[in-house]
Amino acid sequence: MEITVEELQAKMGSGARLTLVDVREPWEWSLCRLDGARHIPMGEIPVRHLELDPQDEIVVYCHVGQRSAMVVEYLRQLGFGKAVNLRGGIDAWARQVDPTLRRY
Image (cartoon, rainbow, N blue to C red):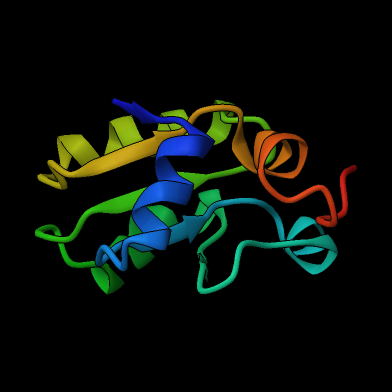
């Protein structure tokens, strides 16, 4: 299951209750991030998923959407039925929504 950057922007603008989870590495997180995102590197998800509510709508992102897609699949297997992948990751967000966001 995926969400586009335009769909995410609309949801964020409407005040929808979302949990943003950034699964990139700490060095990537230090370069840029989405406001309000929680940083849980992909390798820590098997333990730290307990910090998340399985009932919440969770949008997972990484640099271009590959790692986050794997994390979403894993979370859904654990019962996080509303977890979705941000298609294109933070790079798509920077290209299509916020050109001031640093790209790498």
